[in-house]
Length: 74
Image (spheres, rainbow, N blue to C red):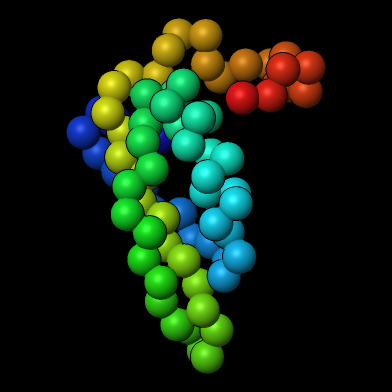
């Protein structure tokens, strides 16, 4: 849960580039935008930190029921 004007940081694995690209459309539908992606090293392993900026309120039709999510994913 992030208020408009706020942000969240998502911890991702080293091969998350495709996932990030796919998430851009879903983020926009939910009033957010993918921000900067930071590469870090933790215990000798590369990881990505993805900043997601909340730009406007989430539309009232979200969240959806599990059946609706399965029938029509974002």
